[in-house]
Structures are given as C-alpha cells and as structure tokens.
Image (cartoon, rainbow, N blue to C red; front, side, top):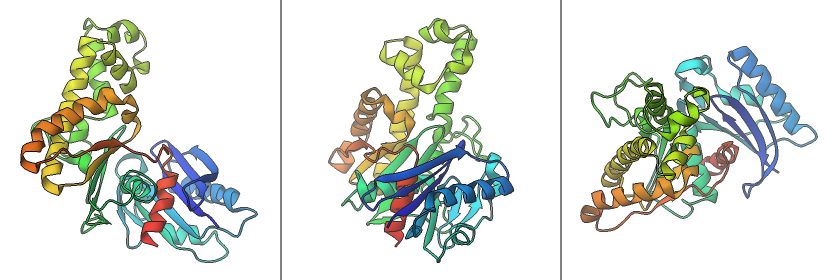
Length: 315
C-alpha cells in the first residue's frame, strides 16, 4: 500500500510512490511540459510507469503552484507559462488511469509543504504554525487551530505577496512591492546582477563579470559569508525585509513556531541567525516570548512527500 505524490514544478514534473512513513519507494522526474496535451500525456506515462505491477495507490496527492480549489482539486488560477493548467480537474484526469477510483487531493505547493511538516516534520503535534518557502519566489502556508488555512477561494497564505514596499518593484501578480520582489532568489540575483553590470567593486564582479549566467542567489550568500561588502548589503537588505514581514505575521497569528523551507534555507545560519535576531527584537516585548524560527525537517526538495502527506491530512 502506497500513496502517489505528484509535484508540478516550474521546471520539473515529479512523481513518486511514497510509503505511509514518508519514505520514497520509487520516483520519476521529467521536464514540465508547456501545453495541456503534452502535460496530460507525460503525466499519464509517468503514472503508468510507477503503478505498473502494483494494485495502484490508496490515494493521490498533488502539489501545484497557483490557486487551487481544494474542494474539487481543480486549478483556478495559474499565472505565467503554465496558465494552460487552469481548469484542470486532477481527480477526473488521474482516476481514468487506475483500476478503481481513489481519493485525489490537490493544493498549492506551499500548503503541501506544510502538510509534510505537519505529518512528518517540524509542525508535528503543533496547532499554530507559519511556514514560508523561500526559493525562486516566496510561498506561504498557515496552520491555525490545527487546520491548514485555505480561505474563501483557496488563496489564503500567499505570503510572498504581502506588500512590504508600497511603491516598490513590480510583481508578476500585478501588485508592487510584494515580499518576493525583495526577498527571493530572483530578487537577490537581480540586485547582484545590477551591481556587477555597473562594475561595482566586489568579489561578485570579479567572479561573474564575464559569466553573468552563473551568478546565483547561493553565490551571493557565499560571498556575504566571506565578508564581501556588496553581497552583505544585498543579503542584509533582503533578510531585514523578510524578518520584518515575519514579525508582522507573528503579531497577526501568534504561532508556536515559524518554519522556513525552500532552496535559500540551505544558506543555514548566515540566513537564519540575522532573521531570528531581528524578529526577536521586533516582537518579544508585545508577545512576551521568542517564537522559534526553524528550517523545515522534511528534506524533500521534490515536493512529492508533502503531496503524499496532504492525503493523510485530508483523508
């Protein structure tokens, strides 16, 4: 008996058979197709490969960017390249592939990540948790009184679109000054590229002036850890804004802890310690305590384990 976990990422489509203890038994990964016809064909092929020789899954969990109607597991809004997914009903598509109908649950990828933490990770046994996923963009999810918050139409928890600079940079959501325009891999890389392009005196300029395509967020954090002044300024401005946003969330939700997930968290203490320090001074007096800020414990960058956990929460 196993759960089928599916993660639809911006670049890769990932599927896995997942045991009830969160262990990945088998997996498949393909580049995410860019048309509905190709997507349906690729997903069908990968599912058939994974279920071959088995009785099929007991449930299917799907993580997907955008706004998902969790009652019907249908994609409502999917901006950008993958807008072709809008209107896709996952139970209808997937149950056509199995010998018998099985429960299919789909949700926003950040809430799926929180589901993984609730079942197998840092949020296990907790009732009030804020989670942010820090990567190319910023995702968010909320656990309030033991329930994952989804809102009226599935749009709750989009924490990357908190306005932190009313007249700031334009965001792909149509707003200006969203959190992810200041703190995200794309935002940090854009600031670094600007510094290098202008010829600013920096280790970043020395290393990447002739190869801008190799300048990543990880490289900026590495340079900051090495004491580079430009990288430090970029990192500190971004982390200070993130910390201020987290402090605001603490005053709204009063959680037991904050979980940070996503690729940027791999920077470790060079990211976490400045955030913890700033959040503490911004909130301790009013809250009367220091809220722990911890990295995610479900070390599954593919997202399929969280997708499987979703079925256990919803089931």
